[in-house]
Image (cartoon, rainbow over all chains, first blue to last red; front, side):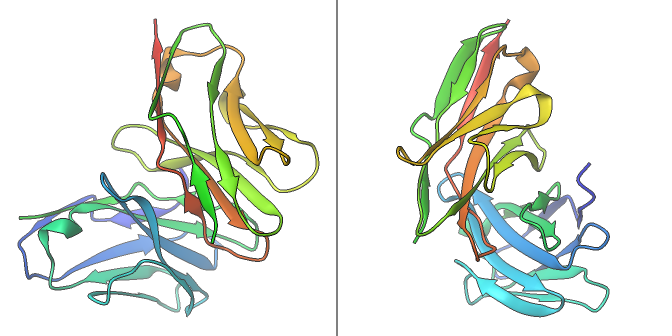
Amino acid sequence: DSGVTQTPKHLITATGQRVTLRCSPRSGDLSVYWYQQSLDQGLQFLIQYYNGEERAKGNILERFSAQQFPDLHSELNLSSLELGDSALYFCASSDQGETQYFGPGTRLLVL
Amino acid sequence: AQSVAQPEDQVNVAEGNPLTVKCTYSVSGNPYLFWYVQYPNRGLQFLLKYITGDNLVKGSYGFEAEFNKSQTSFHLKKPSALVSDSALYFCAVRPSGYSTLTFGKGTMLLVSP
């Protein structure tokens, strides 16, 4: 168990809908990262927050957004969902060190 | 921009034999290199990392990796494979001074009894 928690574990929704994925980092970790894992794209970095501020942006679509709250948990919002958004979404956290620890992921299925 | 190549989609090895999962990288500056393992329906678990120092890095579950700067490689090794090692292995890199990881596409390791 990495200490990173993600909810929900599974999510089934329809095209055009909006969903929110939640992540709680390890105790004391200030950085949160979001990744998308799909069969065709592999593991792709989406966005990083550090202590509430956006720190780095990767291949994140404009339909997607994230935020980190004062208690350091983070939410990833996915809107106007398309079939191609079906994937595993991972959250990871790290402290000032170099290692990112990953949560168990949220499996999103868009029908 | 940095990149990671894992040239083998799948590696097959018999239990008790040594295993190697290959990784090469491209990055500007000094690389920070990582190996993660993913079991079915699970998140990624950290195995080991190279930041600086000894080129041979030891990690969890008896795994080790050798950093080779001239060949820009960071191959994962284990002297004696277990059936329970069967999983998807990811190599990742980030340049020093940056925080985001770039992952390879993953290598499926299958250890047969």
